[in-house]
Amino acid sequence: MRKFVENKLVIASHNTGKVREIGDLLKPFGVEVISAGALGLEEPDETEDNFIGNAQIKAHFAAKESGMPALSDDSGISVDALGGAPGVYTADWAETPDGRDFPMAMEKVWAELEKVNAPTPRDAQFNCTLCLAWPDGHDEVFEGIVRGQVVWPMRGEHGFGFDPVFLPDGETETFGEMDPAKKHAMSHRADAFAKLVAGCFDD
Image 1 (cartoon, rainbow, N blue to C red):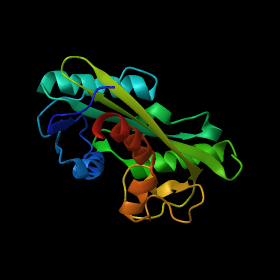
Image 2 (image 1 turned 60 degrees about the horizontal axis):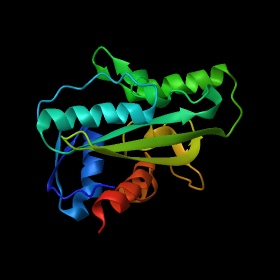
Image 3 (image 1 turned 90 degrees about the vertical axis):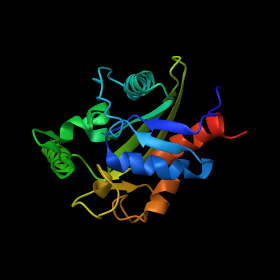
Image 4 (image 1 turned 30 degrees about the vertical axis):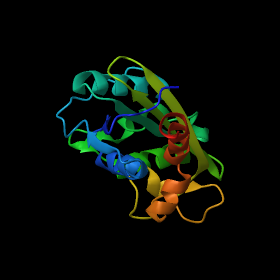
């Protein structure tokens, strides 16, 4: 497994919440992070039907365009009673002509659950796939998950995306209510990051 020895890393995302969360997780390693958006890079089309494939598309595009190593994060929520939807299309469910509207997307997911009269608890999981790619085409991939359930109504002002409706197993607060430090310690992203750190950052 290739070690990360550079001091700058492009985060292959235009999502400010995601960039901030990744930056916080990498802070202990003295890595300076810069977002693809700040570099003026376009967002490549995500043409795969799985998290790994889309993470690789984003990381390799940003690494090639910037000439620096790039880290991408493809993540989403998969709801059991909806056959794993929205899954890799989580962000698509939030798309509007004026940008992404996640409260609308959460309402859409809940409406679908009501439509199929899904039993409670309405089990779900957050998936996170990280791809660290270098300009020479090499990459390393790490996957993380956290199980829980979808709850209603939305709860909490922290986090982003579907956090306000996701209640992790064994917890009483949604990711939207939870102290960010606690969420960082147990999230799907934290799970994938622990594997990334062990593989590419730790000696």
